[in-house]
Amino acid sequence: MTQMVSLTDAAVEHIKKMLAQNDKGVGFRLSIKKTGCSGYAYVPEIIDTIRTEDQHFIQDELNVYVDPASENFIKGLIIDYVADNAVGLKQKRLVFINPNEKNRCGCGESFTLN
Image (cartoon, rainbow, N blue to C red; front, side, top):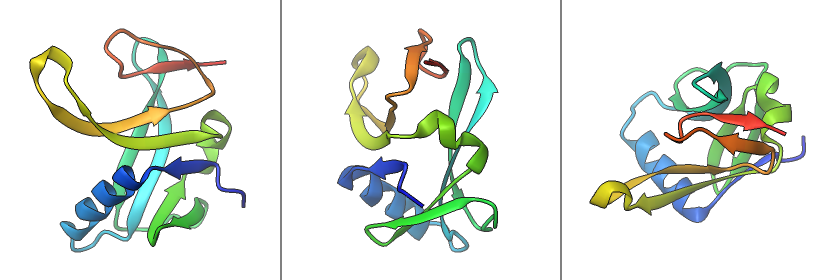
């Protein structure tokens, strides 16, 4: 399988820390779901059970799983971990940079596709 998603070093480091805090965690899984005011939302999660149908790749010793139903929506996606200074509060969070996105809702929780 061609790697359809890539993670920055900061994202990999953050996810590895999350996995280390979860005794049963076996990897990071990404899917999308239909929701929100714009149509779709990313669903990142630490998983403790591998779904055999998921696409799997390893990046910097991190097991990454992708829901096969989400593949066409996230080809070329970059996941980053950045500090967000919105509303004067410095918060760190995963950021999804998707070349397939057409638009994002005002709250940033959901997106539409090209």
